[in-house]
Image (cartoon, rainbow, N blue to C red; front, top):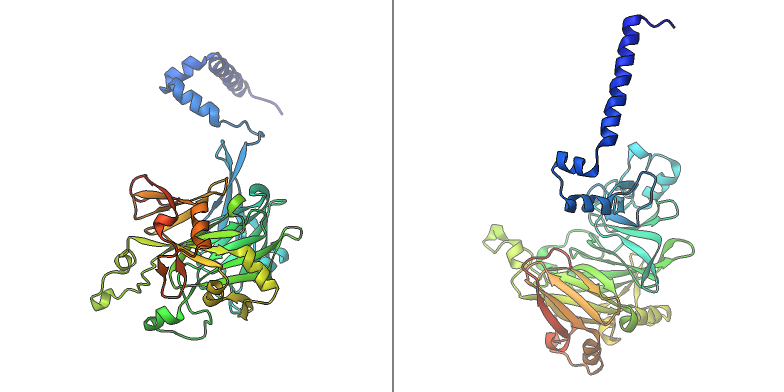
Length: 403
């Protein structure tokens, strides 16, 4: 191809300009760049701490719930680059999830009463553990809008299984794992009748609506939840919330928040207080403490539990008779409970309380052993007095969303 002289001259000029510009840029010192951009040494240090070169690996991976996208988002730390959107509960045409045979079959596992549910509201992912520490083999994620739990295999970062809770109607309180991922914990958010057969008026709320906590059995070798080997604790119609599993001295026990232990059902149209006000009338709610290890043995021995909608249900009466469940007051409207790494303290903060409460497991055990209770709730569950469980109360300011 012949190049005309005017075009050739333009190309030469462009090349010279680029070379000169490149030389000028390469001659800039760090101080020059800082001066031009108005950056301080503190700014440069912050950038250097987070910079990860292209092709380099981040020190950590974070798994974040995508909320109403129904996804899990994976990003690197410190780079904060988004590395992958994992399709879970929602078909995603842009990456093919829900359009090939394999992912279609996974989504089909999430059908409820024969209907395709093609949306989700993911909230609290949990990473699989060994001896109370992450082994990073699997991630579990809940669907708050529909009572489902999904299993993501971190070998290929793909969703492999979705299970539907046959007793619940919503589940904010999932997912949380026991120290060796024996079980995945999932708690009810809004109480509902277990049967699901027809409308039950709110006038029967206290008697027929129920909360609950499911311990989903997980098979680490197969990478699958086993519904037939799972069980659910029947709980009062308080709104159960987030959970954590004990470890070390508290191994075998689970801890689950609740809010609206007032069992308020609204009625602003009839001149009653708004729902939020009625659900915040008391100064405390209840922390549920469950002995899953003992329950597991009793269920396997056929001594407790009956099948309801295909799920083994441990009634509150059975839980009380076998010392499987206790209540302790906790800060108002909590959203999170954490067992410290040593397993001897449990920490809870309330969204409507300016304190974080630290519980002492040894004190709680002593109260259990001596059957020292301040009373029982309307369903017969024993209540351990706050003074017999609390280690300390720490002022942190009003309204922390999460513990």
